[in-house]
Image (cartoon, rainbow, N blue to C red; front, top):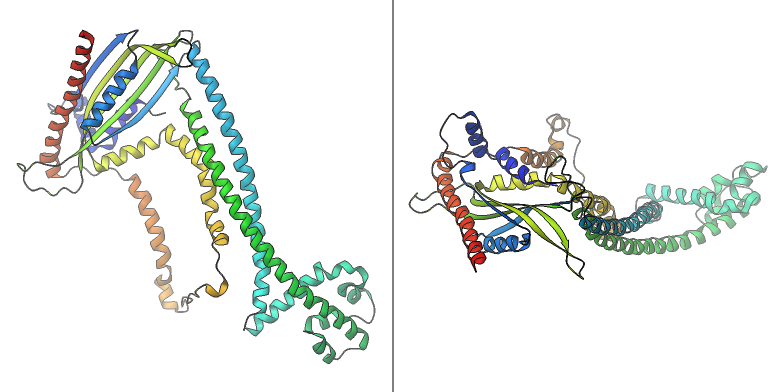
Length: 473
């Protein structure tokens, strides 16, 4: 899971401004103005009766009234193995894991069914292509399709007659060596009669060609009917796959949310004690536009005043009488920090948080559910949204015959553009944030820094005074 300390380290890494200020602070070269540590305020409450919920939700409501957007970045907890709270949550996590596992088993079963249907549809489509070519105006394609279907009939249908089949008679009986060639050449009984063969062969060819023509018309109808039924079944299976995937996600996410964070050698965490540790981080942000006093400045990117509120709670879980939930009383540390971040830095921050364990687990969940469908979506759409051959627009083939254009890579431009777009997306994600220009550094960021510093202190001061007034009353 993402950690509170990691959030501040990420900001110092991704932001050229804070990275430079942090380096200056460590080397102690220059006096720092509006440094990260100057916009930091700390509140500590230590009471066995005061719980974290009122503190947290009071600050959430306050920040919602001040900022345009408030999000939760970190939500970790750890219960000591010797506490009753640990047993309670472990039981709930086990139930969620079992339910998620059952749903995933259904997803895998349906996914295998979808794969088998797709392979069957591909085989049907190959078979149907011969029937389509049989109706083609191209004489060569029509003849090739007829020969292919006759071969299928001999191998699948006629072969069941045993020794009286066309192949068995041609290969095993004297006087019928020309039977296969005659059958392949004949179109109907009349054309078989015109072939220069003996009467015995002609009679067999006439009978077999009539059987073949009947099979040809009946098999095409049955095959097209089976093809449509398989397509309809594919639709129902895909809908079932999406439904089970949707049902599995809440259980998988709940199982992950109930996982506890490793505390290592943290002295606040003792295995045999009845203890719980909570870590929460809120980010409030609002866009700030430069005032008119600075002048008409057209900014290339937006700037935001941001306040990070970190909660670190060490408490003693106590079960509420005759109820299934727990109440927590203990020591709470609330830290307020102010940052000035532009839109590029905020986007980079979100991507870095997604790379944490939380993002990895959510990607695994997507991989086991949605991604499984997305990988097959192209083939699924091909069969489900398939149009008739006559309705499809024929695209003109590209002229790739010019060797001089090929030498300069003219025919590869389309592919190169696609590759360049995908590579640009990947490279843009990995690019560092651009440093501030002179206007941003000298005018915009100092102004927003002053606003951020004031607002962060106001939130800290408002809550402190409100809490004091409540304690006095």
